[in-house]
Image (cartoon, rainbow, N blue to C red; front, side, top):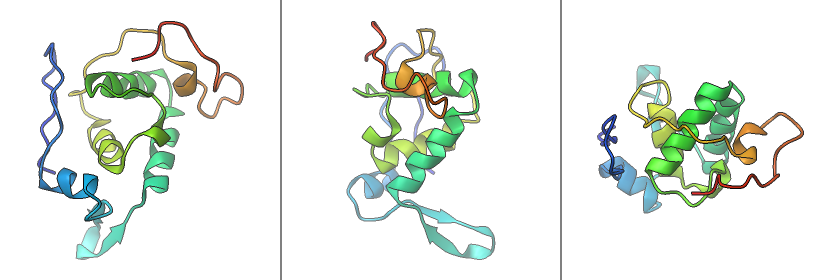
Length: 129
């Protein structure tokens, strides 16, 4: 959708940009998604948070992508609900590709504990951004 993504192996994180990302960030649109046949639907932040949380339940590989994405974009939190719509939509757009920098650290409890029912909310030393 016109965004730029960090190059694999790049040492400096790059900002995601583009007219749609800017419009979402400024609150002018709420993540317009085209569907088959040209129909449009609006996706709110709560829906995007839920989609990311479901993706994170898929296992360690997706959790590492999320942590790599958060780190590359210098987020102060690994929690999906702490991110804005543009951030969440961009992650979901890139999640199945290989453009997200690898994350080699320990997966924070708030990411690894999603849906697991036990570890969520426990602070893990050295995992903050």
